[in-house]
Image 1 (tube, one colour):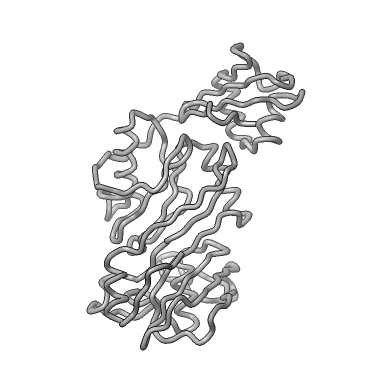
Image 2 (cartoon, one colour; image 1 turned 135 degrees about the vertical axis):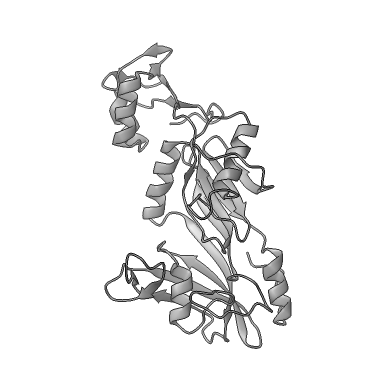
Length: 307
């Protein structure tokens, strides 16, 4: 129903395919949230064939509905951090996060974050978008991070995430040689206390599922590909540690060996998702960063194709 080729970062362009109320078109056919419909009521900015209409008004088959996107901007300080962007369209920015970069400003990391970098990128393009992260990575995990430019895109992708319709794959270097070529770790993850960042496997926790597949066995380590079915905090790190194969470099759950790598050797290398408005499949890859390549070489391995 979104007209391909007519979409903009600051406007939705919708073709009605049958006679129905605008509210039903937006909610039932396009998955607009109830909150966004309430915002449209307040702003009175729905145009049908160039004429303002209420959300309760009827549209006919063939009518063109235009809705401006008016959300303001985020208040992150723009910073040029030479961040690499893997994909961008009117709804999304997909960034390649480097190691040691925090995604969102905190009290201890209030600048040089991915949010600062994306703010700069948006300003350079002359756009006015509010930044919403669809997924997040730990500071010492590198790879793919998806940013929604508007509330609709964030809502749609969050729904897809909850339905397991977004495929997220990681590559890790773990301690020890894994015996099984592939398998699934289905263990609940629990936060012991509010003041602890560490998670544990515990029956009181939320169901957490990680699929793994061995890419290469080294002398005393394994390169493993992982796919998340759920998205709990520290899930991969906790799960791998729980089966005796902690991530090399992980100072919380794994084996610290600064001669091999300075941080946890975990990289979000692939993501497959549907474009929020048009619905076409987007598949993104991020190359293994240099510190992980060097770690693999130090461990006697060779990895040329991990896709």
